Image 1 (cartoon, rainbow, N blue to C red):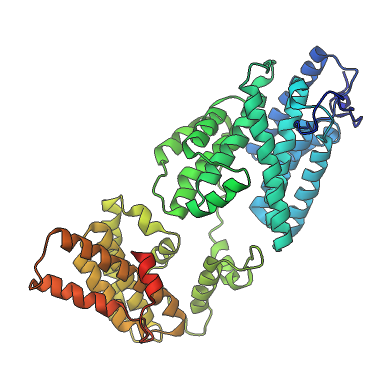
Image 2: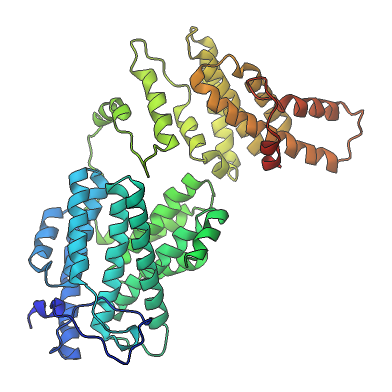
Length: 486
């Protein structure tokens, strides 16, 4: 049986009995194939794609692509996995040519899974697989669109692709859970693909701020974090074509996203449990050694590597470039605690608030850095670095519940903020908001204790609140920001 029959470009006419609002499938299919023959051919394609994916994950990149290339214009799964491998390489290199090549290949894969005119209720098993492939192509093309072009038009186009993919996955998920779905021999791969798509959407959407999520609900999106995690776990633990993708997304969530968002909900032990079987399946996966000479070279290129998203540079990009300038001058001045400073930028202090031993270790690092700073000769960044250490120490005290000590650190920060360089004013302004929030929380705790007006602590707090209601530029602190903090 020729594999070309899987993806014949002959369109199938829609049945006149189908309503126009019913869902349209995307699979190309030979009309002369019987179901049994199609299923056998589908299984052979899935097995070959699994072997190619195993080669890729065992660091045999070229062999994997060579295995897939002969049928990328014939088989939907060969086209999808071939484009997925190229997209993974593009994501790792971020080279414009690689991203463009991956986008064009993914577009060709989508054409292989082009729409035909059958409603969802009349699809056979092979067409259901192509429906899932089409949705995955749409999702991956959207990701490449966001990377390839930074304009607002491309951002909107990518959003449309995301919504189309979301609606397809939603319809497929409802269908395979209904009594109308007949499970074929390759159903585990179909179910794995749908679990990956629905789980990824639910998990990702649940991470958006509530205000943005309410806006997305008007467009038909919804997100349930626990349900998304459960679907991804089901997909990762099964022996299907998308198990690796499900596992990678879960690993990214548990070890990276929760730290970036500062939610503190990551589960490292769960990530290790998920990774264990894949390390046995892919023993050749390892970091390339002896790259110690590359970091200094890349650090010097930081100012030239600024990215833009939707036409704007992210604040973290500007922050890294500004900090890198201190190492490029004729007399470079090292940063006192660059790791802790970057942790603060990525909400790391919110995450470690639940780990007292980590907070204590960070406090020791800050005390040592402060001692080193006081023993160092004077330089133009001295006051900036002292303010930074005061701020980070205040955050550590806040996490430990020592609010008065934290308030004292923020008082020092405010006192010295006018002496900082221009580059640190934004940092001091953010710190002032933090100190105001801390003072207000202290006010609540003191009111619960019913402290009398003559109490010295109460008097000190009252004076500190009035002190914090002025900005570093000696202007009254905006009442709107005060209300926002409360």
